[in-house]
Amino acid sequence: MTIDALAHPPAVVETRLVHEVHRLATALLAEAAVDPSVPLPALAELRDFLVANLRHHHETEDDDLWPRIIAAAPAMEGALGALSAEHERLEAALDLLAVVAVGDGEREGAAGGRTAADPVRAALRDAAAAVRDTVHDHLAHEEPLLLPALRDHVSPAGWQEFAQRVIATTPPVAGHLMIGFLDEAGTPAEVELVLAGLPEPVRPLLPALRLQAADCLRILRGTTS
Image 1 (spheres, rainbow, N blue to C red):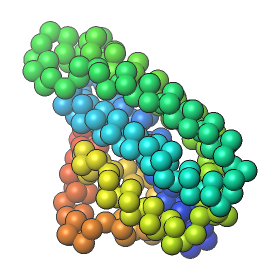
Image 2 (image 1 turned 90 degrees about the horizontal axis):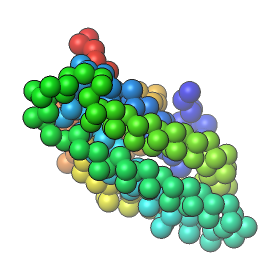
Image 3 (image 1 turned 90 degrees about the vertical axis):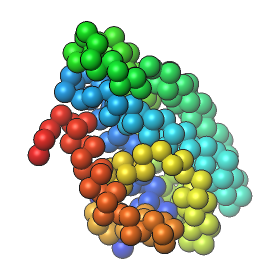
C-alpha cells in the first residue's frame, strides 16, 4: 500500500516508506537465506545492509525524534519509552544476525555450501526470521502511535532538520539496496520525496544505483529476469 504524497505531510510519507523498506528487506533475507541459488556474498551484503540501517534507524528515533515529539507532546513520553524498549529487543536480535558467519565467499565451493541444508544458511535463516518477526511486530505497534504524532507534533521545519541529519549519518553500507527497496515500496512521487534530501553530488549516481540494485535483488530472489 502506498501513501499519497500530496495528501500527507512529508514526515508521514517518508517514515511509512522507510518502514515498508524494512518490511521488504527483512522478509527477503529470511526467504533468500535458504535458497541454494543465492550466493553467500549476496546474502552477506543484504544482512550487513539490514543490520546497519535498522540500528541507525532506531537510534535516530530514540536519540533525536522521540525528544522532539516529547518536547511538543509530553504525554507521549511513556508510549515512546515503550517503543524504545522494543528497540532494545530488536538490537538483541540484530546482534545475533550480525554474528552469523555468512561473509566467507569461499564457502560457495565447499560441500553443502550450495544447499538449503548448509548450516550457515540455516543459521542465517533463523536469525533473519527473528529480526523479520521483531521488525514487523514492532512496526505494527509503532505506526499507530508515531504516524499521528508526526502529523500533529512535528513541524515541517523540524522534520526537514531531522531528515537531513538522518541522511548525513546513514551508514554507507550497500546504499544501492536502499534505492532498490524504496522503488519497490513506494510510488515515484513518494520515492522522490525521500530522495530529495540527498546531497547534490549523489543525485547523478541514482540511475547507476538503481541498475545495481535491480541486479542484486534479482540475485537475491533467485531470478534472472
